[in-house]
Length: 351
Ligand SMILES: [Fe+2]
View 1 (cartoon, rainbow, N blue to C red):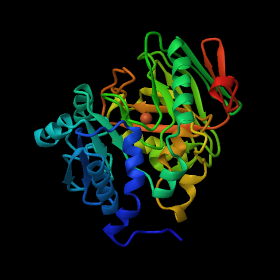
View 2 (view 1 turned 30 degrees about the vertical axis):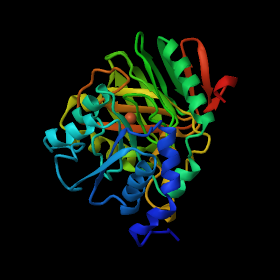
View 3 (view 1 turned 45 degrees about the vertical axis):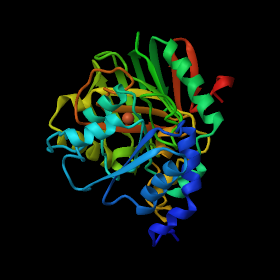
View 4 (view 1 turned 90 degrees about the vertical axis):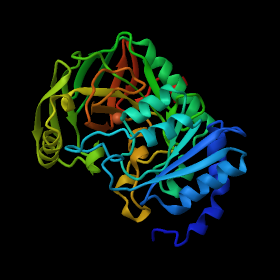
């Protein structure tokens, strides 16, 4: 049975846990912390974050926004983008934002971009407690992510293939590689505590080939495992055709909803490297909603995304849309170096 706290006092049991998380994000005495939440945020999370920051000697304040406000839910089609000065100045004025908003919040918005440029660290917590404990940001996750980042950063051409029929090639010359390892421990760093993955944005217009989503692969934004293979044709960096069964239909519908050709452009590609991520977690309702980072960070997955990539990866596709897709059993090359063979790491230092 899912365990639901019935009182904000549940925070008393996890202040210590949050202190550890904030400590891993290098929170120091005297720094400023903004706990950013909405009216649907579990109250004990917000209280624990405040309590932890306060205990650590930080100057902490909480900002609560309506969960339904378009100003804070910009990641949806047909909702005008907004960047309220009040929220933006609070983010930019904080050394660390603990973002516990329940919706898309400020992901891929000007507020996140400007705050990070001003040096604000962001730790976004979107996980059930059990998931947080299981996917703890250990030293080994950080080290593996940074080694993966170094491998991805050095390459110019990426190639992905699979027995299911994927065969994609792309250019990333000059593009940096991004890593997530669960700690907002440097100025401007955006992290989720249960993250463990690397990605880069290919050069615009360079992606060519076929992407096949096989049975069991994941379309994250639909919270769905693929049951009927989906065949996606990508030409000059963007999707030109989607073919298959129910999931193909749903995916087409998702893209059409945005009314924006930029939604179809490849955003980022990379692999997951968190050894505690679970592929089946998303399908288990007994554990509560979640599993985002299980899908994204799954050890040896191939993750490809479409839409906005204006973040730390240095892409140029400025759109409101963003969708992440995770695939198992893929081969992944960085130039002539094969990183994954059928979803298994070949390089010892990445294992
Ligand atoms: Fe993404």
